[in-house]
Image 1 (cartoon, rainbow, N blue to C red):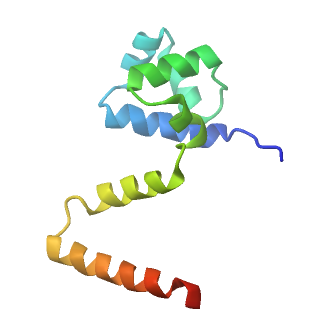
Image 2: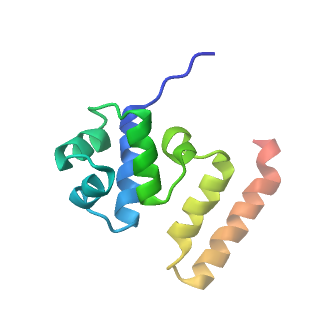
Length: 112
């Protein structure tokens, strides 16, 4: 089974981690000793970062290289993290209703 790295997805994860850290492309470039343009190319997936560059970016953004390359070690954790961030600032009663619906569907999933 041959897998390839999706450099566009890699760049999107770098951009998301950078924005979550409130770091500009210029600041990330300075920290990692890269030009702002090179950071932009990496984020768009038009340049392939070296292992060393990827390591420096991961350290600067306080994320794992696994997250950047594989999106995470445990995809279900990624799903729960995503749901948590989506539901975080929503109306608590509506979130409770949503979770009740999800539980009901999960209970019946084998019937689909």
